[in-house]
Length: 100
Image 1 (tube, rainbow, N blue to C red):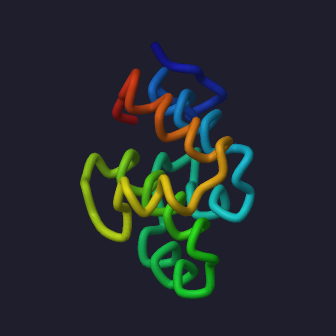
Image 2: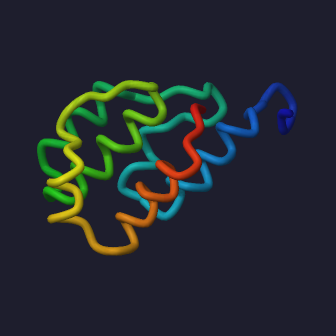
Image 3: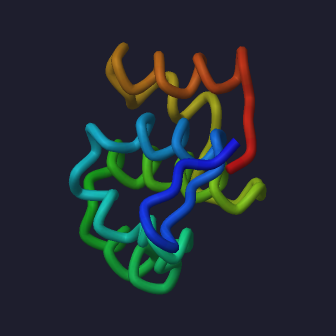
């Protein structure tokens, strides 16, 4: 299933991902929804100035989008660092994983 606006289309999984990341305004600027791509070099550069928790969330969203398991995302580190809302995002995805 896709949503169309002119030539603009997102799959159901891409819409789900967009909805999941929307509250993280410091991250959404690195996703181009019309092109359905991530500015990975820009995100990597920005991660250098993010807080530790922001880096973990950035790595989580990048890994989900890319379907990879790149650092700096460690489960124990995430549990020790993130607040309950951020952890709920990760746990929710782990309970019902999807690939955009």
